[in-house]
Image 1: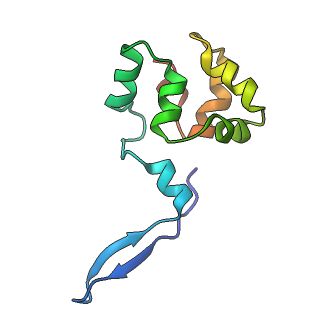
Image 2: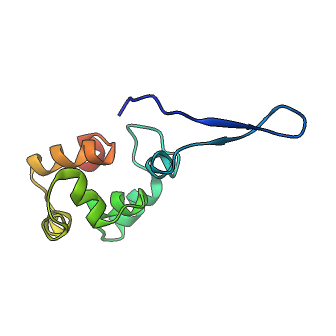
Image 3: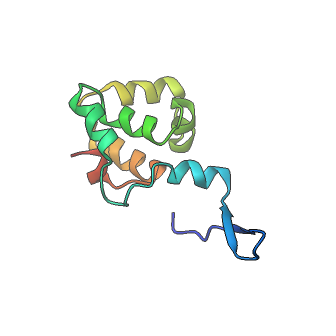
Length: 109
């Protein structure tokens, strides 16, 4: 999670940095620009509106069930069951948090 990311800086016509390119997988992980350790408003709103915390985070991070399932080593169907539960087990949260780049507290608030 703290691995170095190789960014590429693109210069503008004036010779000054204009853009930064980041590997697509890193971009997807960073999407939304939330501060690590916090829960973004869109995730909180989804849960307050009756949604599931795990699903709200997954959708916020723009991941499919199959992508998350692959990260934690289960089938998509098994992950769908994990995601559907209202009170996930601690063991489930311990698997999911690092796979999503989150802390357990961010998943279980």
